[in-house]
Length: 105
Image (cartoon, rainbow, N blue to C red; front, side):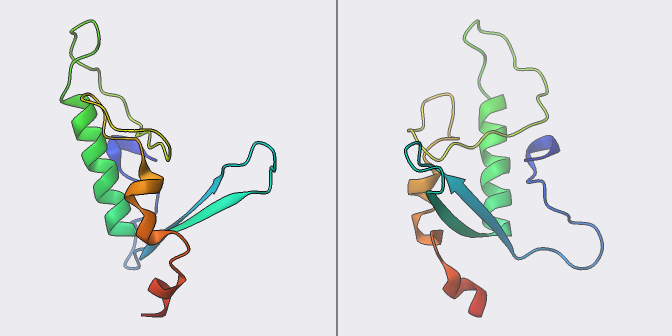
């Protein structure tokens, strides 16, 4: 993830990426275990922006306004809370897991 809630993908020039490939190594017993998500770049970018904006729209536990953090954190496990919608992306993006068919269109 990059600055101001944008995915760290190159949007310079005339050619923009169509997909973001996310390889999630998730096996502690088997370090080679992984899940692959082929997410349309626009979907990933929108989710990152939404999560970043949501996070900054809520005050800290101490009731203070959040400072301008220049990173986005997205977790593939867990559940969203009243202060964060950055969790559970394995479930939210289940339709993109091993979605090789999207590359054929």
